[in-house]
Length: 370
Ligand SMILES: NC(=O)C1=CN([C@@H]2O[C@H](COP(=O)(O)OP(=O)(O)OC[C@H]3O[C@@H](n4cnc5c(N)ncnc54)[C@H](O)[C@@H]3O)[C@@H](O)[C@H]2O)C=CC1
Ligand SMILES: CC(=O)C(=O)O
Ligand SMILES: [Mg+2]
Image 1 (cartoon, protein in one colour):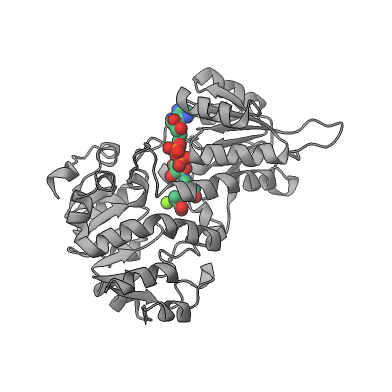
Image 2 (cartoon, helix red, strand yellow):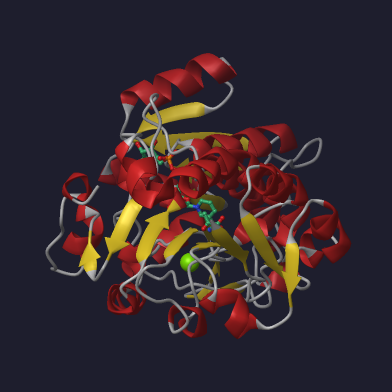
């Protein structure tokens, strides 16, 4: 199969969808792998590393896209990338469509087959292609939050660990999944006082057991969120309803109850964000202030630590990429009930129910297409 790996073009996105190690696995299976010149640079992979792995380099973006059968990316396609997609091509990347109607409609119009990393499932009920980046983003959320608490960023001037004689800062994490656990773990490591809210008792049990009561686990209700808003120095938004737009759990009116200079880090921003006042930001300008509360809402947090993230992402995606390349999308999805929910758009139709529901559109059961 003809596989193309473009250079990512989103703001400060330095990851690449395939490492040279991955390129070698595909090339030895007889696939043609073409990598855009400079695509791996930001993650520390030189063009010559790809060549040594058996890939071909292409400097012309038009040629790269137009000749490909399978396109591997990291971030959701930007408008100029959507314009390059056509019927018969398969795109495999993060899509986060429920947060972006224009992108959804653009992909439908392209006629292409679009498979999202974030809706592929596993036997344990997890999201194996979202998890590695959620681990990264969760760990980064506390770094970002701690920095945002500094006065120069508009923060309250609280040092999360405190110092002898001065209490530590309070961190609340809403959503105790992969992002949430990793954020809470980092906050604990820094010496902050940590609470995790989740709607899933099973998840709270896991956290209680794993951390032996060192973080408070709280069932997520409107009352619990009201209390978190009043008491926290830093709140991390880490909820997910797979494929769907995130629920808005903190409204603008509630910001008035927060301590001035407190910080909201909305990791769920890629699914639209879980705070009413969240809007996507970039690594170039990651924060803004609303009603005295600092908001950090970067939608591609792992892009900033591209070396670690690229390796972690491609470790997870490679088996699925190999299945797509060896079998074609239809058989790859038909053979694997956990890969099948990755299909979000095919030939003008939405194939993921929560995405269709977000825009009042109809969805087609992907099982009927493979
Ligand atoms: N901004 C970025 O760069 C990145 C963002 N993400 C995003 O972070 C979000 C979280 O991802 P994961 O942790 O992997 O998901 P996950 O599925 O592991 O965890 C989500 C948790 O939220 C809980 N939840 C759902 N509704 C809730 C509510 N109302 N109150 C409290 N908890 C609730 C669920 O029970 C679940 O435990 C996703 O939107 C994901 O796309 C992930 C990686 C990078
Ligand atoms: C999951 C996601 O949005 C990211 O890694 O950028
Ligand atoms: Mg996004």
